[in-house]
Image (cartoon, rainbow over the protein chains, first blue to last red):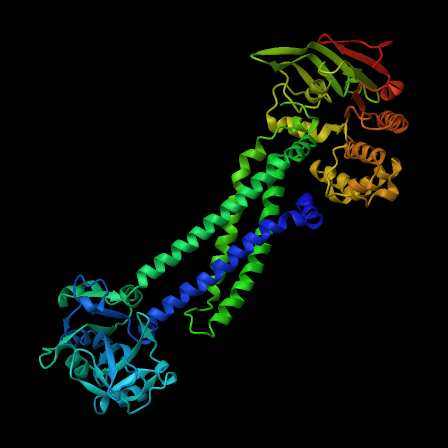
Length: 363
Length: 234
């Protein structure tokens, strides 16, 4: 790196262009990482906030609540497992029309029975124990909805007052509203619910044989993390973001590779000279690839820093972003790794330079 | 032959060809040459006679199709690419026509790099570089980049770089070709003087008169053969 460092210091202008491109890719990659994390958070924050470890759902429902219908009595079977807690839960998307003619609300309506372990906060327990009503996500309070406002839930004749607000998050990018399980059943099944719910939420002790439990209850038991996959748009969003970030990494690697190839061609005589002086292929490669690694690391650090600031600023707006250090550092590390791999494209071009070119003699 | 009389550079039955259309043209064939320690041998020849190729082969930069190069008593014909690089690193210094200095390095750093490549002990590199630059009257120019040096200074730095690590063989390819006559004479004298003072076997190829005036032996490459060049104009 003796030559590489001095070349960087004295000929830094040559590296500005490639550095700027890598930095821009890092900015974009960081913002996308923030957006991907934000979208995941926004789509599943409601589920993440609930204290369950597993869900028991209809076989083949693939973690999608709208495809799953189980009998709420199954909860008693699960509750017999030592140390386990179980609660039926109903989940559906509804439109709530303001009775007084105000704007309607789109809700991810969660129905939970009074006393459920899912309603672990005292205010939530109190709301579920009282007369029927809605406990809305606190985002609605910011939009002017007030306690006491009445809403008619779409597709039913059920009209409910707003009982209060809680930090409930959202599901499938739709703010969550809690109500009692019986109210939820009335909204979805009218007067004939027949004990139908979307799933049984479980808090199982570690080491529980979920396979045996699933077989005994004729359900699919999925982990909490797996339950996020059923969130509307979750898989598509995650795959889209992963694809875009993947393309960015490939583009970055190609840019670095192309730049380094041009540099390697320009340096053919210099490479020959170093070899004529007795430098090994490894020495010359170390110098060249090390130099590109320095450029890529520096550009990525700058780009990632700028990107992190942008994510932090966006986080103050309505944009669904999240500043996750692990994700952003991981994204930067990948960018550095692919940049270095890109510079290795010229591996053969460097190793095959003959020292005789230093004398201008054909090898 | 005792080790003390082993010439640092021996060329044995050396041949080389270059592509000429679909055929190979013989540049030289059966060249034998010994260069003793401290001896300055100058090879002249017409353009295209193969002088630079002879130097590339002697410097282990190119593998000869026939014959062998023996450096400091070590035959090199059977050596791998890596082995030849190692011999080059330890035993051979090369001076180029246009100095061939590295743009981003100062005069001193050119020598430091050579020292590092030749795996000299780190603590000796700086002192050796300063000593060489001083010997070649470049002490006050050590911090200058090649672009800030005159042609003669660049060539002197090139000579100093070639001498880093005390090689036993010094090869020079048209070392005075890009200099005006006064500077050419100065550089040629310096090259010969340093080679003799350090006991280095020096082989210089040139079409310039300046190195001839300081040669111990003058050979002429013509018709693929090395012949006595005494009396032959460069």
